[in-house]
Image 1 (cartoon, rainbow, N blue to C red):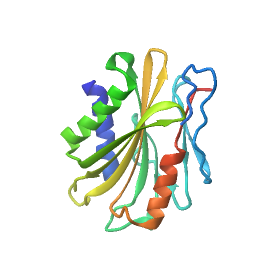
Image 2 (tube, rainbow, N blue to C red):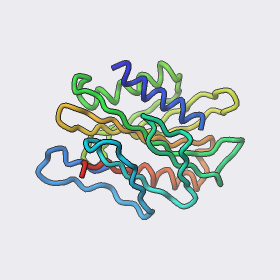
Image 3 (cartoon, rainbow, N blue to C red):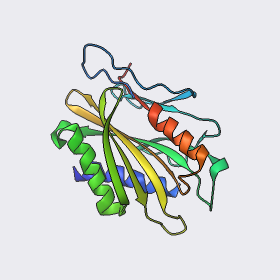
Image 4 (cartoon, one colour):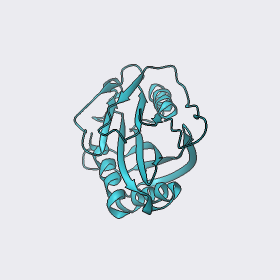
Length: 199
């Protein structure tokens, strides 16, 4: 568990610097719909779930954070304040079924955020993304060097594929959470995030 959670933690640290699944159910579960364009995040294997992310106006693709874990990122330069640009970052990793049930995996990630990243005011809310087990978490990330403390919301989803689980996390963050444009855009991005079964 520690190694897999460490990847998510590492992604959270990098972010600072910067879904529909049938799940073997008889009928597909509808995903939440939003009124902005959707971006398809490229997959790297035929087994990975397909991820789709809403892209509100002025949120542009950035590749400088891309890695094995970080699969996609958007940022809105027009909302930059005190040198920090609000962003939305998507991570994906594969974990074995031996790590426990989906909710246990999600809870372990949050425990690592507190233990390693020292986040404060962490609040969680169980939810679903296109039928998959998910958890929405809000927290305040501490200042890091020249980067001020940030308000973040993370939506983590566990997609089950046989004896393998995929964990994807969408994190949006800003230093001005009350900005009306950011509040509306981030809510849309979180609401419309999709995790789909492979084609």
